[in-house]
Image 1 (cartoon, rainbow, N blue to C red):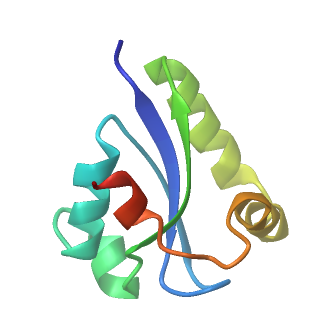
Image 2: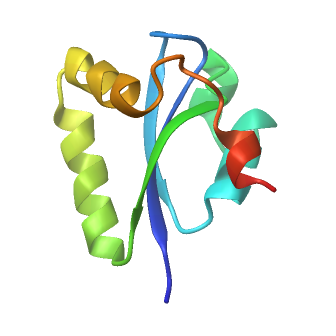
Amino acid sequence: MKTYFVYITTNRKRGVLYIGVTNDLVRRIYEHKHKIKCKFSARYNVNKLVYYEIHFRAMSAIHREKRLKEWKRDWKIELIERSNPLWEDLYESISC
């Protein structure tokens, strides 16, 4: 079964937020960290994975990404802090 991920990266706690969708979270975060294929990440150093969720249908993930992008900033911060209150980089936990 194919999986899709909606994710949020940042440059620091409560800093710039980037919301994206991918079918390979490890590869995509690697690209953010090394500033590959992402001008926004390179410009704002948005390379710290602080939130992600799994979807099993592409359209579901895309729809969720679009909805999150419409949310108020405070709502996005609350979403992150519910599962990651210290804003830790989750990349190590997914790349093993």
